[in-house]
Image (cartoon, rainbow, N blue to C red; front, side, top):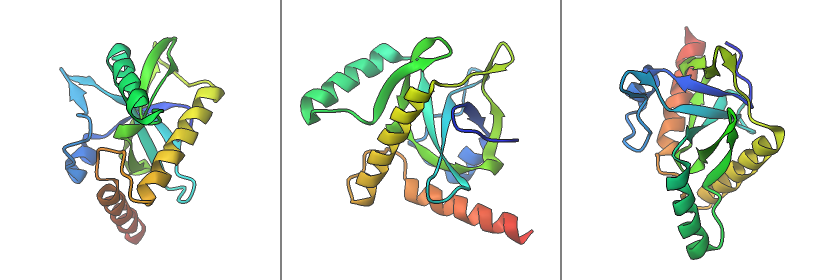
Length: 163
C-alpha cells in the first residue's frame, strides 16, 4: 500500500498489541474501525509516520483548547480543521510513530479516500514539529511513550530487513 501524507489511515490491531501503550486511543469501538489517523511522514526517518488521531468530538476539544490558551497562551497539541466536510479535532497530543507494516487501510467515505487541504496539512506538520522539538528538549506534551514506541518500530524494521 502506498502511504501518502494528506490522507488518513486505520492502523492494524497488531500494532496496538505490540506496543501495549495505555495512552494510545483504542483501535475499535463497537466493531467499527476507529479512530482513524492522519499520517505525517517523519522528516528525519522516512520509514516512520507520525499518526494523529482525528476526533469528531470538536466541542469537547474546543473547551480543552480554550483552557490551554488561557493557561499557556497557545495550544499546539489540538488543531481544529475540516476533514470530510466537517470540523474535526486533530490530536497531536495523542501522536505516535508507526511504520508502513502496521497500516491497515486508507480511510474512505463512500469508497473515496479523503484528504485534508494543503493549509491544514501545513498547520498540522508545523505544530507536530514544534511539539516534537519540545519533547526533544524534555518538555513532553504527548501522552504516549513515543520513545518506547519508536524503539519497538526500529526493532520491527530491523526484523523485516533481516528476513
